[in-house]
Length: 238
Image (cartoon, rainbow, N blue to C red; front, side, top):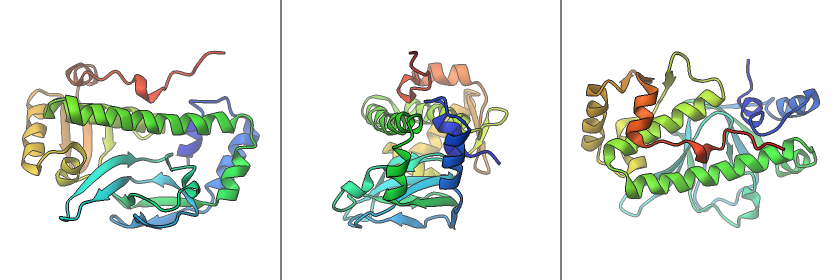
């Protein structure tokens, strides 16, 4: 079975067999979690780093009135903050959006990874891409209308999941509910539903039984104004 972490990091560095074996050992004991399981709560004092191996998770902030804002999607191959042990306490929660498997990695193991001359730059790349995605999400929320906002999110997920081999025939699993998409994009569930219908009518996407099909990726990218450069998938030349 392909390892999503190795597939992801190989876009940032030329890894050798020893590097791959090191990363494979890191992922050797995944834990199965149910949908809505909490990986870490706001206020926790973090010790270990979580690595998503399968399924979806999210960063989330809960409001006093019970509402919440989803701040990021975490997909297979994503670390939940490599430097998390530096923090005194977590300022947000990390929750599973689907069933999945997660690896708990000690800070000692993370520090050992940083001694590998090819793995270390790839870890920095992953952290910088996480920050770039957050910046793009801010632009998405603040500047794009609802239909472009949703189309942009679909384009991003397509690219991120294709990176780890989870797109087939322009389709991928998308386990989020319309309510959770609304909590991500600052839209009501009714508005999300109408926006999905609009994208369907334009023959851009099909979404059924938690499987999203991108019917016309070039048109969807053009409609969303999706550039994709913030994902930094093109390796920097020497």
